[in-house]
Length: 108
View 1 (cartoon, one colour):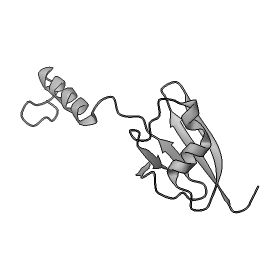
View 2 (cartoon, rainbow, N blue to C red; view 1 turned 90 degrees about the vertical axis):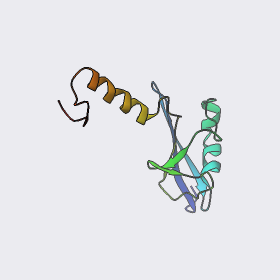
View 3 (cartoon, rainbow, N blue to C red; view 1 turned 90 degrees about the horizontal axis):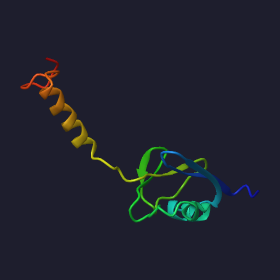
View 4 (cartoon, rainbow, N blue to C red; view 1 turned 120 degrees about the vertical axis):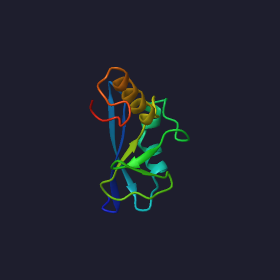
């Protein structure tokens, strides 16, 4: 193994399966190149880099950002529900059931 290569992990998680692939790349390689070299796009045909967001260690990044040794590139699936809408519906239901104050939203 060449000492100049960086060790990078690329991960993608589905509800029933997680893929974690290791790839060795040259210094200065960008995120998109790492993802393509890992082979994860062939393994998961549902990944579309123009749609899916990516990040490193839970922080969203651009595909053009360079990686560092030991980085874990994460490919995120699109949300199926807006978290704000879900919380809003849950709060309305609590008010209707009398579990929350209708004015303040706090506990009844």
